[in-house]
Picture 1 (cartoon, rainbow, N blue to C red):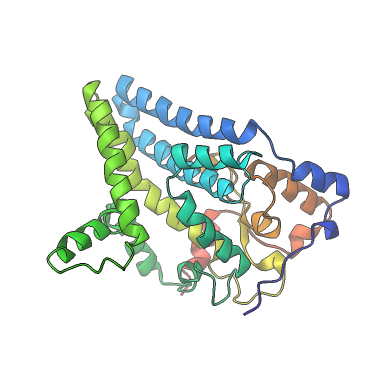
Picture 2: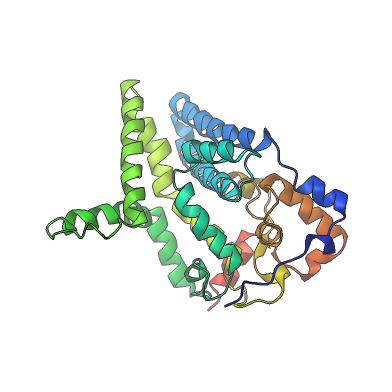
Length: 307
């Protein structure tokens, strides 16, 4: 199938606007990575000093964990830093080690968005679903079942498969590779925190957010971006959804302007920090009236569970 229709920047922005929107920054992306880790660190310190803040810290840390993935996503487009080597190095070591596997997968998603070849289509195709079904999914996320299946399931499958001879010509699955990285990375993190006498901080303010809040908000993000968006959509303005987000949603659910997903699909050359400005320019010319935009994540979830 042919690639999905694409928007032409010159139809929406002047040459000066486009040049400014697509300008690469040598410091902004790196600052956002520092910001994400800084917020995580402050949440951990607050949890040590004031244990009553731990429940809030779980939400804050989980949102920044998603934020690190979002910044890795920018790096997959080469937008985190103008130097490709720095862009990839920072993303691999400080955002997500899955950059190299994620990049071709994600670029295929953009090329064939909401078409049969889109690898993300299974995430949006089942909607709408019933409220009961959505509630079950939320329960699995918050109880850690989703985390266990995604992170530890491949490792358990490998352990069971060891009883049978392995075909050396068959490559290991990406899920298995990610599972091993996860175990190694967290073993190192736990050891460092335990040596400092704060092993419980790693468990409560790193692993617990990753096992509960992160799967839930990742699911909500996936629903908001493409659920109930038309298949084989010929209009680039309606191939993805933008969701308006207030300060609380940006802090706990949609960090680093991830809610401007319609603008990202329209113009993949824009760094995440330029998406709000692009939205404002499109709104000023009346283009946003033609886009798929929802007033908030609650509205999106109501649509997604309306069956």
